[in-house]
Amino acid sequence: MTSKAAPIAVPQFTSKDYSSFFLAGALCCTITHGAMTPLDVVKTRIQIDPAYKKLNMLTGTRHVIATEGPKALLTGFGPTAVGYFVQGGAKFAGYEYWKKKSVEFVGGQEAAVKYRTAIYLGSASIAEFFADILLTPLEATRIRLVSDRSYATGLVTGFTRLAREGGIRELYAGFLPIICKQIPYAIGQFTVNEYCHEIAFRSMSEETRRSLSSTNKFALQLGSGIIAGFAAAILSHPADTLLSQINKGHGPTGSMSSRLAVLAREAGFRGLFAGLGPRMVMTAGLVSGQFLMYGAIKEALGAPPGLEIHKESSAVI
Image (cartoon, rainbow, N blue to C red; front, side, top):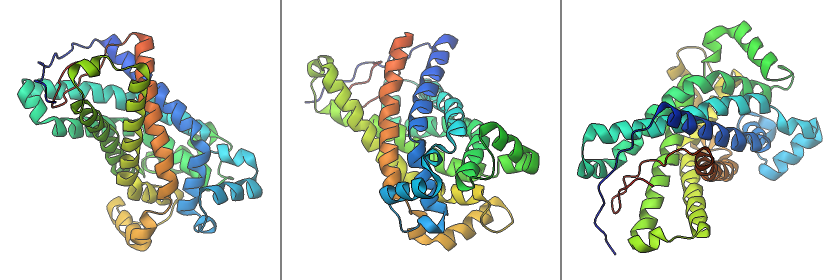
């Protein structure tokens, strides 16, 4: 059943609203990424350690525990929690900001709906770019800690050693591959989630949509988040593999683009997607959990709803 789209009401978000968006995004990302630290440790080992190349998630976890002890599964927890706190806040608040600005820029409901894909892609990309400026040094520290247990004892010592020995250049050595990883990740996360909701809403009448139970809303958010997580993992995985290699110190010297090209040729198609299965599982949990928590935290903070520009029913929800 097709219903006529309602006019888009562009909200006038205040600085307090954006602060709430930032805090909600920061909390949902640091909680989910922190909880996934053990999976990420094993995934990173599979990507960069030859001893783990033929192992899966379960056998890899057993190998880590057997050789290094259970505590090794929490390696890198500090930089993960702090890094994704600042990155998550900037990403979610930035996406809300740039989506609103994009709708205002194209002008009018019809244009916003027509160019909604470009709005989703552009908003996600710009927000992620600035968020990655905050994330990159902490992600470099995390990968050093995970790939070399003797490198440092934790976040502070690892970060200071990396900054002291390599300076800004080493802290941001992974910036190009990280934006190559995170921007496709954000595009998959936000754009696919938006379209999953749109497809679901198209199959409902306006009355059904308004009367959705809490259980149905939860199921819709969870299902959309899982699908978006799968898309985010697939789109970003080759760059994720290269990022792990770069931050471990692998590869030739030269410009970052040439180093990435050489590493990609050495890895081959199969090597670039090593560890994709575990990462898809991890990312589906991350993305679905983030969207569920983001909405709940925003509501608890009294923040206004985001702007929706779906084709069949465009409104603020």
